[in-house]
Image: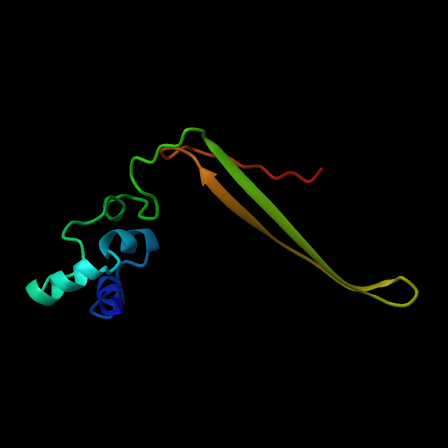
Length: 118
């Protein structure tokens, strides 16, 4: 399975397909029946047809995705690091953060997000 995965990912030493969803669709996990079939008939777990996402403009998204409710969740995580002396004066400070999104939007909608400092 590792060889099949590397074979689908690389083409003459160059990265070809690195999207996890496309690789999962192309290479099926091994089962006892698939092992017996490949041992007796010489088959493989690699799909004969390309998955839908590999020929679209967005290979990371499957085609025809439909959700019951169109919604998107954003988690904004901020972290403040500071060094304060014994008098309460800030010596150094740093603010870092990440925005994590979980999108359940059907199709390929246009989405505009605006973050405004209040």
